[in-house]
Image 1 (cartoon, rainbow, N blue to C red):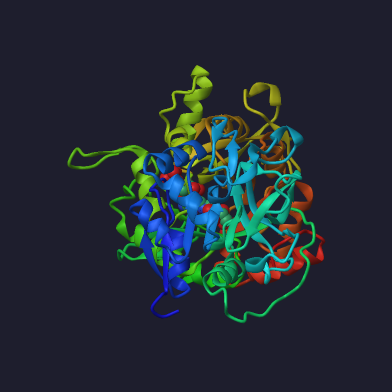
Image 2 (cartoon, rainbow, N blue to C red):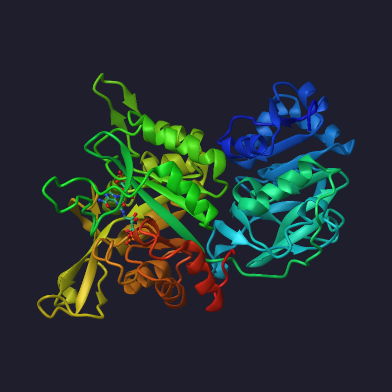
Length: 535
Ligand code: 1PR
C-alpha cells in the first residue's frame, strides 16, 4: 500500500487507542490523526475506535463539528470502520446515562445488557458470531471467536436489518457488526482479537486484494471460557525486571543467596504466550505496593513493547493508589492508571487499595467516589477495572464465632476444624485485614469493579488445583466475571474449575513458565471436555 498507505484515525482523546494504532502499524500503514472536520472529509479510509462513554463522545463530536463531517463521510459511502462505541454512535440514541442522541445513521436504540437475566455484565470475552450476509471484512472468520468488552449493545430489528452483517448471542441476540457498501462497524475489538482480528483489519485496509475466502457460516455459540497467562514481575536484587513466581507468595529461592526466582523476561514471555493462544496476558508488579509504579519506568516500557506485538487484552496491576513522592509531588491513582492505559494496558488491577476502599465502604455504607476503584471505573468504565483479591484460608471450629462468611471445608484444618473463612490480605499477602473475600467481592462490585481476579495464597504455586470452594463461593456471589487463580498444575484443573464453578476465566503462572503444561494443551483438553474455548 505504498503512497496511500495512510489510515486516518479519529481519536477524540477519551481513552486508550494505543492498541488500534499498534495494529494499524503492524499491518503496514501510517496513521494520520483527525484534527479538524476537514481531515475527516479528506480521509481515504477512516477508523473510528470509540472509547469512553456515549454522551461524552457525542459531546466532543458535536462541539468540534465532527459529527456532521462523519455523517456526510458515511453517507458518501467512503471507507469507514467504527469499533465498539464507534458502532454504537451510528445509531439513533443510547440509554447510557441517557437517552443521549447519536449520529442517527442506523435505526435503533443502544441499550444496556440486562444483568437480572443471570449473565455477567459487562460482556467480557471471546464469542463467535452468526454471520448474516456476505459481510466482506468478516469473510475469513468462520466460527472463530472475537473479543468483546461492553455493557451496552444495539439490537436487531426490522428497521435496521439491512445493515446487519453479524449478530452475537449473549443473553439476547445483539448486533455484532454492521455493513453497508464501504461502511463497516464492529461491536467487538479486532485489535484485541488475535490473528482473527488482524485479518479483519487487513481486509478493511486492503479491500481489493484477493484474500482467501472461508465461506464458513458462523454458528451460534456461548461465551468462551478464557485461559489467562499471568506474569508476576519485580526487580531482582541485580536491578533487572524479571518474571518471578512464588510458592504461597514467597518468591525467593531457598538457597544461600536467597535470590528472587527468575523465570524469564516479561516482554519475551508475554509474546510467547500470545503465540501459544493465551486469551489474555496479565502483568502483576508484585512490589508495586512499596515502589511507586510511575517511578518504575521499566514496567511501562514492558507494556509499550508488549502491546506492539500482542493483540489480546493486557492487564496490569501493582501499586495503583494515590501517592506522594519524595519531592512532595502528589499523584492520584487515576494518573497512575492513565499512564498504564496510555502505555498499552486494557485493564488495571487493584489489590491492596481496593481492600481499604471496601473496608471503608462496609464501615460507613457510603460511596465516597474517591477511592481509586471508583475514580478509575468512572473515567475508564467498569470493564477496565479488575480487583485482585489475595485471600488466605482461616480455619474455624464454629462458624458462629466469626462475623465473616464461612464455608464447610473439604479437608479439615490442622486442629480438625470443619469450616473456614477467607481473609483478605494487602501488600502481597504480608498483612491480613479484617474483611473476608466474600464481603470484599460484594463491596467492590458495588463500588464499580468490572471483574475479579481471585487468587488464593494457600494454593498459589502448589499445583494441586484451584480452590474450588472459594471460586464457587465468590463466582456465585457476584454478577461480574470471576477469574479463578492459584494452584493450576494440570489441564484437568481447568475443566474442574469450569465444570464446578461459575468462573469465567482461569489463570495460571507457574505451569506455563516452567513449560510443564502448554496453553494449547489446556485449550485442547477443555475443548474435548465440551467446554467452549477459543482455539
Ligand atoms: O496490592 O494493588 O499493589 O497489587 C499487587 C498485586 O501483586 C496483587 O494483584 C497481588 O495479587 C500481586 N502479588 C503481590 N505479591 C505477590 C507474590 O506472589 N508475592 N502475586 C503477588 C500474586 C498470584 C497470582 C499467581 C497465581 C497463579 N500472584 O498472580 O500468578 O497465584 O500462580 P500459579 O498458577 O503458579 O499457582 P497492589
